[in-house]
Image (cartoon, rainbow, N blue to C red; front, side, top):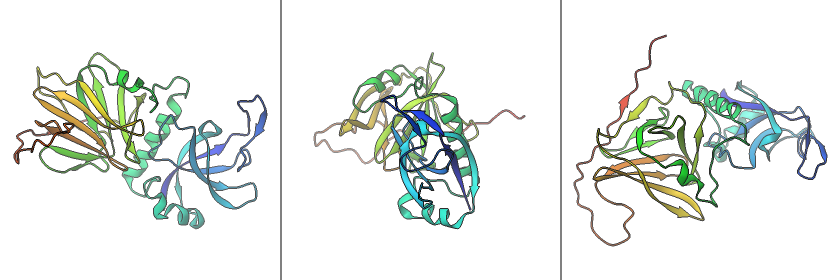
Length: 274
């Protein structure tokens, strides 16, 4: 058994040329599809799904995101679907069978349903718009519980983080896909899932400084944190957060001392009792 985000192919739509289309080229309208997009970027035009094709074969296809409606979380028991989901090719794209996977899938659906594509604040890898989203002083950072791993005193590995900037209501979510960042405003989030918190020391300013890029997309972000640096690095499917007194963006051959007295201290958020 696995948890999965499922949806239906839209019955009728108007394409960019003004033509009325029924379903998609691969699927009839109303077809139930299983999403393979755990780390989906809200700016991608398409997302991978599994469903019965027009020829009644179970296939994996990429479809336009706006063609999927009625998202919800379901348990999957169908052997033919599980056989595809269990393929190593999809292990980081789909959800598993744990309680943490269920919560992550529910959060995915909330985020999808709560913000339309037209109003979603997000960034394009071809512009510098994301810099505007990272402006200001960091108030605190929330870490997603599932997949969080304290690597050492200075660093932590996690699935995603939420950054709260001072004097701004919306939190900015960072997640990683194929070693590049997804950066967008989180309209809603699961407080129980993002239950680990880092707060810069009082009277310490923590601001965005610069980024490193690959093929036009940011792969690492650097923030100041007083006399230290706070780095976010995009791994293949997760994020590494590092607090250090050394500038890892320097491209010279200056050796780094063996001891770093910076400490990335995470505290568990205590939610109010209901």
